Length: 158
Image (cartoon, rainbow, N blue to C red; front, top):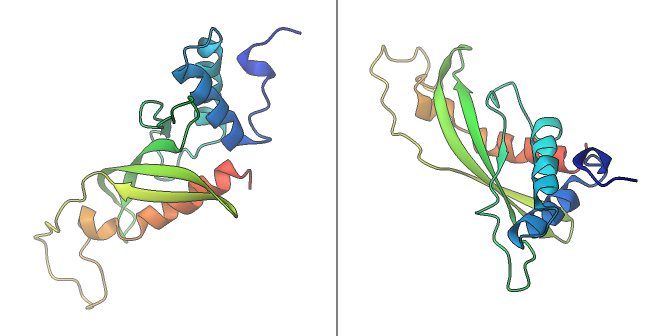
C-alpha cells in the first residue's frame, strides 16, 4: 500500500491528524509534503467554509508552536470572517485567530479578533435602543463565540 495524502482518514480524528501533520512538517521529515497535502484536505473538508467563512480557514503551521521534542502544543487556525449586520447585509471582513488546545474534556477553542475596529457608524440613529447600529464593530458582536463553537464541532466530527 502506498502512503499518500488520500490514504489518511482525516474525518476519524481531525485533531490528531493535524497535530501529527504539524509535527512531521516542523521536524522536516521526508514525508512533510504529503502531510502538507493532508492539512489542505483538512482545511477543505473539515474546517468550516461558507456562511461567513467565505474564504475558508487556514491552519497556521508557523504559529502552532512545538515543544523541545517537536510536538505541537496547540493548533492555530486563521479565520477570515465575512460579517453580516442584523439587516442581512455584509458590512466587511474581520480576521480572527482560533487557538485549539487539549483539555480534560477534549479540546478548548479560544478565538480572538486580530484587530477589532471602533464603532464608526454615522447613519441615522437606530429605531430602538437595543438595536445595533449596523457598523462592522457592532455587527461582529458574538462572532468570536460562533467561530469557536463551529471549529470545536468541526474538529470533533460533530
